[in-house]
Amino acid sequence: MSNRGNFSSRIGFILAAAGSAVGLGNIWRFPFLAGTNGGAGFLFIYLICIATLCVPVMIGEIAIGRRALSDAYGSYNKLGGGKWGYLGLYGILAGVFILSYYNVVAGWAFGYFIEISFGNLLNHQDFGSFFGEYVNQIGPLFLFSLGFMVMTAVIVSQGIAKGIEAANKIMMPGLYLILIGIIIYSLTLPNAGAGVNFYLVPQLNEITSKTIFYALCQAFFSLSLGMGCLITYGSYVTKDQNIVKSAAIISIADTSVAFLAGLMVFPLVFSLGAEPGQGPKLIFVILTQAFQQMGPLTGRIVGGAFFLLICFAALTSTISLLEVPVAFLVDQKKLPRKVVVWSMSGIIFLLGLPSMFSQGIVPFLNKLPIHNTPDMLSLISDLCDIALVSGGCLMTIFIRNRWKIENLHEELSIGNPGYMGSWLKSYIHYTIMYICPVLLGIMSVLVITDKFFGLEWLWG
Ligand code: PHE
Picture 1 (cartoon, protein in one colour):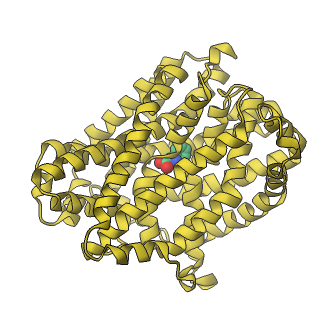
Picture 2 (picture 1 turned 180 degrees about the vertical axis):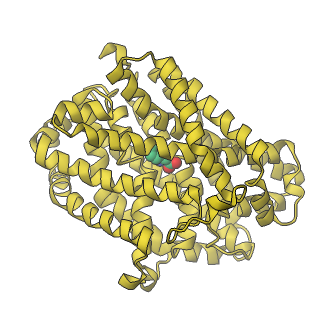
């Protein structure tokens, strides 16, 4: 175990797992999904999913990793034997594909950081068309994504404590500060109240099946669940740590950043008279417009700092995504860490190219003949979402039918002396034994049907 590396402290693990969770999912994806799926209704369902389905899955994953002390594949294999290792591989594969497109979007954010800080992006008039043109140039995007992948690889090749922990300690607090700063600014703008209303006052009749599907997938994605990331990080957690408490802190940290991102974006959207449902370009358009209104110098400073922090947040997530396949190859195939890191990064970067070119450069890649899925990037992201929710479902089935719930309880009581008699034990027991496998199973099937065949007939 000692040569696998460990987090040096409790706070180190929490920061790294929260760093994995907080990323583009919170700041880029959450606001645009909330914007297209009813605002407050989406937020409401999202919070319910976190409390009832996601926190138990997170606790289960960390416990599996700490018990087995192995990567995602090795952990299922060790605790379950038989074919259970394939469940780990399924997650590892999902992680590889998530990283492939995630790195492309991170490249956009990195490009915006450079363009705002050192270029003249803020002099433009129409930020919507600027974005469209921007994601359609090959050169800069290729370079920025490649740069991002290289940074990820450099940090992951340093190993656990040195690379991953150190990076997180600086980035997380900075992100909170800038979000709160921009929220205060946005709330003072005219018509900000309409945005707050849209975001915080749910119209229950606007909640459709899509609201529920997207909210659940987003909750899994945002908390980095269902693909073995937290099994891998859990395997570096020492026995004196309280897993339940750590999971609660990580979930609160992640959810609060997503919540704040929405609170930052929607007042801006409404005060600028913009459309909340504009999809993936939402923050790129709205925030640049807001930065422009702050004036040339302030806009450049605040805008540059904002996109820089998004890049940091994305980096702590790409680190965790890369760590999953790397840990697998290092643990199982006994390959040297550095070799694995660089070759995996290269492969994943290449896998991302179709997503990178799917915004218009290669026309075929954004006219896919699949229901609801206009382009390659969305297709991969949809497939990965399905993998996360179904992976989470299978993980709970693994605990209840194979590893056994008593072993989970035993692992959770290590580092948490009061656990056995507490209400938390019952909460974890019932959610993992019944609620998660049933609901996540049903939802996996419905999400697959919806994404590929359309479910409008079911309920809106
Ligand atoms: N949770 C990350 C985010 O919100 C993305 C991620 C998904 C990271 C799955 C690791 C595993 O940006």
